[in-house]
Amino acid sequence: MSQQEHRPADASGSFRIGGDLPVNRLGYGAMQLTGPGVWGPPKDPGEAVRVLRRAVELGVTFIDTADSYGPFVSEQLIHEALHPYPADLVIATKGGFTRSGPDGWQPVGRPEYLRQQTELSLRHLGVERIDLYQLHRIDPKVPLADQIGELRLLQQEGKIRHIGLSEVTVPQIVEARTIADIVSVQNLYNLADRSAEDVLDYAERENLGFIPWFPMATGRLAREGGPLDALVKTYGASPSQLALAWLLRRSPVVLPIPGTSRVAHLEENVRAALVTLDDTAYQELGDTALEP
Ligand SMILES: NC(=O)c1ccc[n+]([C@@H]2O[C@H](COP(=O)([O-])OP(=O)(O)OC[C@H]3O[C@@H](n4cnc5c(N)ncnc54)[C@H](OP(=O)(O)O)[C@@H]3O)[C@@H](O)[C@H]2O)c1
Image (cartoon, rainbow, N blue to C red; front, side, top):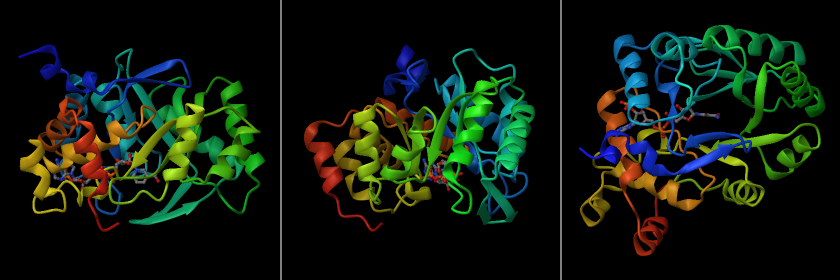
């Protein structure tokens, strides 16, 4: 087996988050490692640990999580599976979205809450500094300067290395950048839903990492019998691989974080890094009419 077959994520190319944290562009999103409604422990905690360890073996160096996944279940599983962390592993977490139960999510951006959640993430991940801390949602009830200002204070105190945003508009990114250095943005984006195209174009121009969430439309694009099935034979790749290879080709700042709770799906997804789409294939996939 070649080195690329052993560590397929290496073939996805590298991006430097904040200019100083290099990651393989194809990462892993750890939200699926929880119970139904992103609440409580997963059905199979052993498989969750295996997924995380296998991701690292396959060359994944960028893992996305959040305090609110579980809450804390995802961060604690990452700690259990991977601590002490490999030197090249970058763990991005988020705060500012509180949980009112399964499937319940409310933005809370009060500075004291963001500080509490950062402290808890430090403890649950078992790190002294968080590589990338993303404001999960902007809280419309709290001035942006207070929310980003608190993250900047935490950064000055050495608890956060870089600050990112999630689900934002271009004007919101521009405003946040007047308060602190912002290095990444995480918005909903996939082949079937490209409503964040303007945010991606802005991120590319400004060399900010663009982290598309729901990269496989939360599984709709990955499943057999799904909308990409018809193209599988033409391109010799699975539906999930086509969806991810298209994202990797879309821009060098795109860092896809496909989620899964199963090792078999993880292995299939990471091998998307070995799929090369030529101009025609990229164009054809992009032109495929998919329901958002
Ligand atoms: N910033 C935000 O507001 C936000 C919101 C949502 C998500 N996120 C982040 O984005 C990451 C990705 O989102 P996501 O996990 O919800 O959606 P996704 O990556 O688009 O899809 C995950 C779904 O696809 C299924 N799947 C994965 N690989 C598959 C394969 N090869 N074949 C068939 N089915 C497959 C998974 O089921 P199995 O478990 O059975 O594989 C799961 O149901 C999350 O983990 C999280 O880190 C961020």
